[in-house]
Length: 377
Image (cartoon, rainbow, N blue to C red; front, top):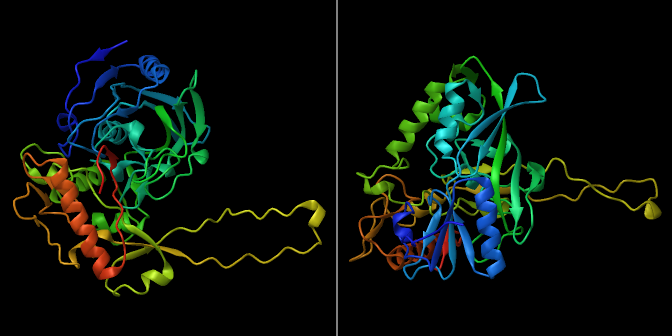
């Protein structure tokens, strides 16, 4: 067992807030991670696992429990049952962008648009990471995980994770608990084997790349263009750029009924949420009359831009409250940044102010994207 001197979470998170937990452990292999978790569970301690710390907002007082650092690494190539594809089984603690670089270098397509996303591979399915129209659920096959208090890990197919827009059954949403409290040990993806090029069909990705049609372009060019775009938005970690001292997008884009979206200004960007095309109606045999009832008309949901709502509620890029060391990124309205020595209380104050402005102007309450530990909005 490896218990270490607790490190303040402000040194391990990209938002740079958070005190030291009561206890800290670390694991460099999957076996060590299982052993560390089971030790903590047997003790009845409060706990959470920490990967890259890029999606965590931690409180100033520290965590009253045990933090387990996931330091596992490794990529294993496996045959795919589908022609022209390959499977990669990746350890949970592996750096996500290192995985993307690995895939692009070998001509494996399917995750290149997610270049530059910070954090670890194990965290990616938890919130169904995505960028520019590409999401991990498109290539995710399965995860190996261990449920809280379980004796051994299990393999769970992607279909059982209830993957949705930046969510899954494993995600700890603000104000709630995960539907399934478990820790991912490894992730398996199924990627297309290419000659180093791919046809870009998604409209959102084509727009980000400046392509007018579904053209075949090099994967390496897609990656470099996405990295450049993210850097311009302050979304690539850079110790010399205070705009990158953030948890990425602090607020989620709002998912609202179509009727609510129609009340917003026409210029507010919005995108349809993909409907459930696999919905099944179950009719008990004892009650079947030979007629299938018509499907109930469901109102479509719409995703609206939180960044637009923030900026048009009067919060400009670079905004700061008086005497605060927390501020909105000068490059991206969705990122709340630590401009140097900001406390969690200062970041929370700014977040609440933004929530109140958007709610006052548009009647929508923006929800935080990061996992909040020992801090409230």
